[in-house]
Image (cartoon, rainbow, N blue to C red):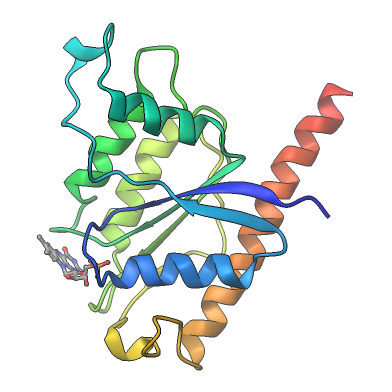
Length: 192
Ligand code: FNR
């Protein structure tokens, strides 16, 4: 079976981020089908269109890593009912120069996690809106607004504790692996 290379973009820079832990757990659950790497975004200077002709090295590194991926997994907290600035900056960096967006046609999934009850719904859907503009086929179901996630959702070594959240993340992992496969297989068939 083909294992797809997945770039994970996490919208939190926090060392103990629950979103990072969810991302790592999801990838571990699908490791036979998905090779995942978290792509750093914390070093990206704020996007300035003036830099398009002569981009900083961090932009080039980030754009190359996204371009090389077969799919993108966004895992993000919600900040003030929206996408954290650091993630929006990364989206903008990847989308330019005009006509050279590295997001173009990449199959994606969006997971949001929060200690709050509505699981980052606002950030999740704001990000979906950007993905429409960026022409990214985003997995529709299962929707992934993971609410009431806290440190007690994980074991001491950062893995998901047994329980309903672990079951949900497993179903997300399988659905995302299927989604990436369906998109790539249909493109292969159309091209043949
Ligand atoms: C938050 N948090 C938060 N939570 C939420 O459900 N909706 C929100 O709008 C916000 N807004 C918000 C703004 C800012 C600036 C911070 C720092 C936090 C709480 C947030 O969900 C919580 O801190 C998570 O633990 C952040 O995710 P990571 O860093 O653990 O992945």
